[in-house]
Amino acid sequence: MTDHATTPGPAAHQKIDTSVPHSARIWNYWLGGKDNYPVDEQAGDAYTAVFPGIVTIARSSRAFLRRNITYLVAEAGIRQFLDVGTGLPTAENTHEVAQRLAPEARIVYVDNDPLVLAHARALLYSTPEGATAYVDANVLDPDRILAAATDTLDFSRPTALILSNILGHVADYDQARSIITHLMGALPSGSYLSINDGSRGVDPVFEQAQDAYNESGAVPYNLRTVDEITSFFDGLELLDPGVVSVPLWRPDSTGPAAEEVIAEHGGLARKP
Image (tube, rainbow, N blue to C red; front, side, top):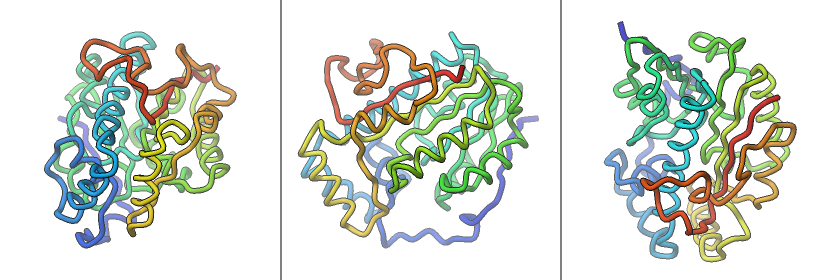
């Protein structure tokens, strides 16, 4: 039987508010998905009117994640993934990439949006050999995340923690670092941390668009400098080429143009 589970939490009792744009639904819209509402399309179009490059950022972010997971499974031998802030299911989700290479891989997705929860229940099914589970929890509550994830993952085995475009929703920089330390502290030696987030100091037009978005009433997303993103990996062993604009991280022929530097930086590191 397919191993698929959902751990209910606060979002399970929330109604979906279609009057306010939501970042996960806007991101889905930019990726070409259909799981969004007119308010999200309007916010997404307003953003692209100022900064059309956001679509490239969204798609480059997804391609970066795919390359990370491919490395983790095929070269590092990782078979467990904790994906926090997964957003709405689209193409090439973490479990799809991992289980295509290793059907026995086990994945826990974490999010706290009711629309994401509904789609996770419907769509995030595992291979029979592996497991895919969903935890309804907030990135600000690492204790709940870890406690619920142990129903599916064995934290005595190396595990990859995926934080893709989620830390920008943690306004306080020190709190973001603390969350990473807490989550990685529960994982054994040989585990990995994958992070990518929007970066400040690269493209002023992007920053202008993001500042306007943050003032729109939507949940703010905070851009950080490349140095700040790099510091999230303190104490870990960064893989080459380090923290770079995501198209430059071990590019392949299936992703966006490798020579394009965009305001989205990320990296992958191993816990010694």
